[in-house]
Image (cartoon, rainbow, N blue to C red; front, side, top):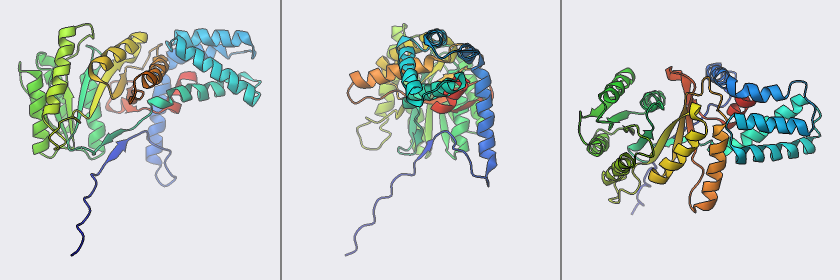
Amino acid sequence: MPSPSPVAAPDTFAIRAATPAPAAAPTASAARQGWLDRLKTGLKKTGSGIQAVFVNAQIDDALYEQLEDALLMADTGIPAAEHILQDLKDRVWRHSATTPQAVRGLLVDAVAEVLKPLEKPLEIGRHTPTVIMVAGVNGAGKTTSIGKLTKHLANEGCTVLLAAADTFRAAAREQLAIWADRNLVEIVSQAGGDPSAVAFDAVNAGKARGKDVVLVDTAGRLPTQLHLMDELRKIKRVIAKADTDGSGSGALAPHEVLLVIDGNTGQNALAQVKAFDDALGLTGLVVTKLDGTAKGGVLCAIARWGEERARTKPGTAPVPVYFIGVGEKLEDLETFDAREFAQALVG
């Protein structure tokens, strides 16, 4: 009797930063270089203070003191600044660096190493549909980021269903509907209804229609608004009840819980990450509005907090940054690359 055919594994793919393209395909490489140029421009205010330290500098204690001040001004936070400086001193000693240019290059390496735990691709396809719940405070750019993320997913060949679970703000539903039209995707919406019900209906609709991804928008709120945070928890529980993995447990849904944070808010962004993580158990971040900010170093603070989180909470890992944004255009939201960011930050 022939043995049964093996069950095929689900088609999965990861949305990650583009690697340098071969000579036969320069377009992707050129596009990524264009993105890197925009990122450097966006982080110019953050990086200018760091770069100024190296002008006509001597490699001495005064340089490290000025660099520590510059890192703190960039909102890296004290733990990250101290870690980066100690690592830099070790690198300077190991490499026998004697010029400001060499030290700055080693600083890029030190910052990139701190940020590396935040670098992780968003995986799609392990679950059908992959349910992504998106949260954030008012004004962080949450709904716009969902629209841009939809574009990314569509470019990868995914079919997407949007859930307008911010039911109490008509402008949010209208904005999401505009993004749905632009990206030619379907949307589940209900004026004034229960947000959890909209999310539940959207997940079931995504299953019935064979969608690859269901993106659930939620109402913006501050983490101090306890009743609204409770509503977020309810949405997450109700999504789980939709049993998206087909096992009957519902334990895997939502598969991603993303927080959108405004890069201009500096250390306050870190406070938001901590609060929303306590409430929802975050799996990823989208950092917006990095164009023109002087506080881009906050990603270093988030990385150091993530390392501490992984040490103190068994079974957890640092919360990755899936995407960063530097403008309002569709192409101004891109995958996060630790070395690219470090280069843009340090110059």
